Length: 92
Image 1 (cartoon, rainbow, N blue to C red):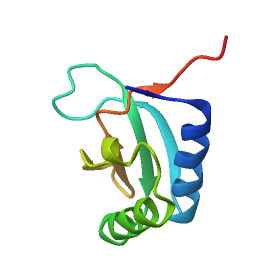
Image 2 (image 1 turned 90 degrees about the vertical axis):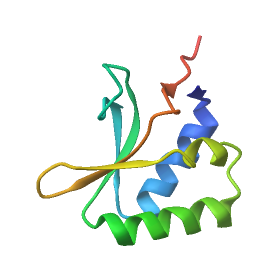
Image 3 (image 1 turned 180 degrees about the vertical axis):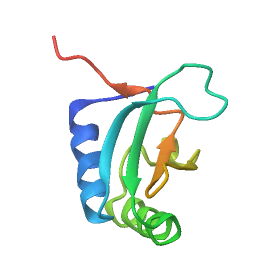
């Protein structure tokens, strides 16, 4: 599923709140080339906790898509990614 532009703005705001950066077009383990949205962070545990809190506080309409969350190490940083969020809808 793709996010609307308004949902993507909320996604970016959540990334900012947890001190992360939006990473578009990430292909994680077992995704076989499919792309999704993610958030790169410095601390995976603290950021996951903060992410859950932000989704609950903001009551984002796409919060159910954030239930399927995976974390990968990128070396010095981590990526929290959401295989069910494929990206952002194109604006026509």
